[in-house]
Structure formats: structure tokens, C-alpha cells
Image (spheres, rainbow, N blue to C red):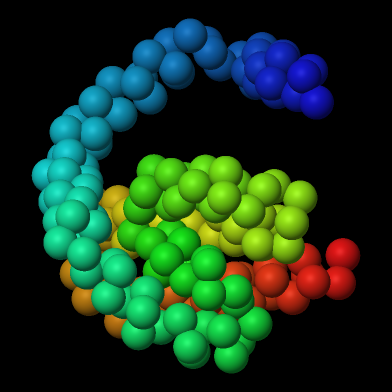
Length: 167
């Protein structure tokens, strides 16, 4: 596994050589395009981070956790993981901190710790990604993209707990 990145780089350079492409200039051109893109995404990312932090600081996530805990328990998700399931679509760093707390409290080898690890690894920060993907396009109506992505996050959490129960 430690050779994967050097192999990808070697393959890229060999491929560029065969196609007679100057790899360095292509890299520089791509980097030039990345700077304006990053600057255009900054306001969207800043707004998303502020919204997540406001919800966490206000205690809104705690209220949501209390409200959704019975429903998630019916789906097979331990109540200790309710906050993680609710926070993961919003914040990667916040959910990483929750996973760390879960590991410290319940251990990494127990059912709850294994479920937390799989939930964290099998889901993504949906709102962050939709902010980035749709901010630089002309598409302003998300339609069904957001509900489907959130449903998939919930489904991945349910399947994670189901898999951890049997394996």
C-alpha cells in the first residue's frame, strides 16, 4: 500500500511521456485554474462552517438527537450514535470529534465503536459536497439530489450497524 502513490505518479509521468505532454506545464496550468475556483468557493464554505458551528453551540444538535434517537433505535442504530448520524452530513471535523469521544467512552473494539467507525467511513458530508458541487454550476435547484444523498447517509448508517452486528 505504501507504494501506491509513487506508482500512480510514475504511471502519470510515463503516460504523459508517451502522449508527448509536458507534465510540469500541465500541472502548472491546472494549479492556475484551481486558485480562482478556491476563491469562488470560499464564501459558500465559510457560510456552511458557520451554520454548523452555530447549530452545535446553540444545543440544536442535542435537541435533534433526543428527538431522533427512538426512530434510529428502531432502525438498529444504537442511541449512542444518534448525534454522529445527525452530524455526519453536516460536518466532517465535528463528526470526527464525536467518533473520538465514542472511542474513548466505548472503546474501538466494542459494537458501538465499530459502528461509529464504519458510519464515519461510509458516509460523507453531504451539505459540504453539495455546496461545493453546485456553487460553481448554473444549477441552483437541488431537486432530489439532497434528499437522496441524505437517505443514502441514513441507509449507510443502518447497514453499518447491521454489518457490525454480524461480523
